[in-house]
Length: 554
Image (cartoon, rainbow, N blue to C red; front, side):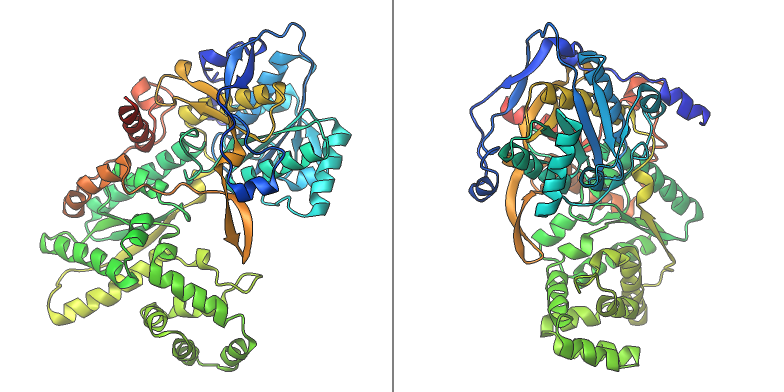
């Protein structure tokens, strides 16, 4: 272990006062049963319309030991280990004889009953550490009849009182379906979800933020700030930075508010204003030209990972390509053409006029990628498109055209950069370390209270940790039916950036100034030691959203 890791391992997260003495607490009904989408309710009738739960004093003289399983599901997010250490400490407070069992390598560990007993020695090694390597993670979905039956057999065989699923929207949807299946088949195991995703799109009026978002945006903001300073120092490069966030732009928005780059695309705004790829490219080029007139041939552009999927014309193009590439007559014709340019011409000729125009504006490499690089279902792999390189190539083409017309005389040298996996497994910030530790305690209390189909919830996060509040939220209330791969499936609705929200309003007030000025902010690395204003700093997004909500309530 590095010296820093050793110091972090000894850090003791503070607990909210409301849950310090877990043996004198239980969850009780806070409200009448909450509404569940009627189509979702048909699927999970046994666990739908459950009430919100709040903590209440209720001393248990001789609590029974708990046997709890825990699984990490999906991509990594800083703080996952602290959910486990919080869960472990909580069930040991309930009874020293309690046991925590880790399912290895994600939900497949539940199906295959692949486990390890998590002892104090093991858990202690991972306190306040990054990553999911204590037990590993995976993206297996429990969705077939055989998988559900296997999960039932595992829970019964191990005699689990509870199963904690630490994951994002898909994983927590899985938790709700598994809870329903267990109730229907009279399995005693309570199933509890924990909100995890660095993308920040698993939140609602109850879940204020998902864990990992705080750490990831601080990590990315350090990188963006460093690149801004490099750009300013060299004075000759434009950096196009793609940043995590395929389904929503929360990460890009938070990092923009932290660092003030010259141009930031917000995908939700692109969709709302129905911007075309050409319009977006022109907006970037307009900024580059204006800066060139001031002698500034450098700058920073931030692009959310999923930006191009929000462009209406691009969505139509992808839909048409998926349809086209599902037909043998077209795939055979494309395969028979050897010349790259002729392949592109063929595809452009069979698309609709609008999609053909969009397709032909793309750089040649991406045109070919869209027709050759497909997933196992035959669909275009949009997520593999390097959008930072796409916008660089589009800018090059447009700036060359403007230079020929005499409307641009600057120099354009661009560097692509991707802020990605380095934000997922780093040491959790103090906020995420303490938030996750509290989430683990709340999950244990939900199991102790025999609640199932609930998500562990910690509220009032803009207050000091001692004033945070614990709650249980029915997962079913967050779920809707959506079409996935042609079939209606229950999902937790992703929370997109609210264009009427306060964080976006703060961004729009300042972005025009950031375009031309070098108003860069350099946040530096995450701070674990020192003044509270830097060690316990929360995200701008969380502060603005909760302040706005508090004002609305008052």
